[in-house]
Length: 258
Ligand SMILES: [Zn+2]
Image (tube, rainbow, N blue to C red; front, side, top):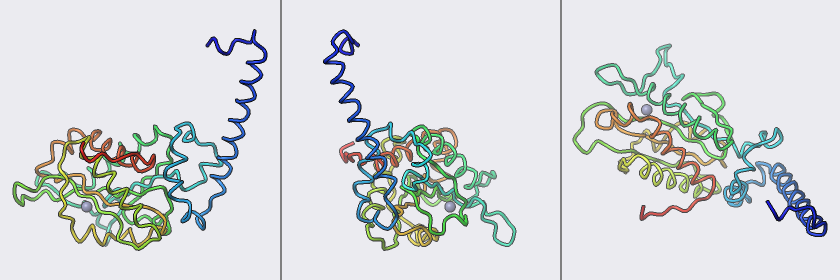
């Protein structure tokens, strides 16, 4: 790069000075960021969602930043680890033995890999994980899939529901849901199905998270009519969810014309 030519000492000195100023600014920003605590996050969350993630280099976290829950994404693997009376809950089951929990786990694992590329801390959680109590994160997404029974030909598509829990800023969960709907639809081409069930609306885990943790539950598709997408392109399914989370984390624009 010719402008770094050291034969011009004055210019070089200026560049060093600017470099130092940028360095100090980055350090102060990082320090302020790690100083934010859950108590004042309610005030700062709007900035938090937008600013620290606008520069990808900040996502290559050092150990101090890794301690911050706000760069953490929680993924609940629907039905996984839940075993009422000792019998593992498979979720929905197809006649040929395909289980919802196996689909959920595959998609969640791929989603985690996708998000790790950005430097997020990504945790896979069981359906009734003890960690859910008071869980703090930038976002939580619970992955489920819809019934394998034939309902009618309209039983295709995906569903997304934001937490019902009254938090100080419920609009954050709504924003997360809007991001996931928009990006998942764009990436997979699957239609959004607004017929949200009671199980989603009153999802048990929503009650447990810390009040400032934006959260959504997703049915990524119907196991009968959307089976091909779910079983043959789980990476695409996961990427659609990952793009939704990125949209939220980086405060990206949702272009409804897409
Ligand atoms: Zn389920």
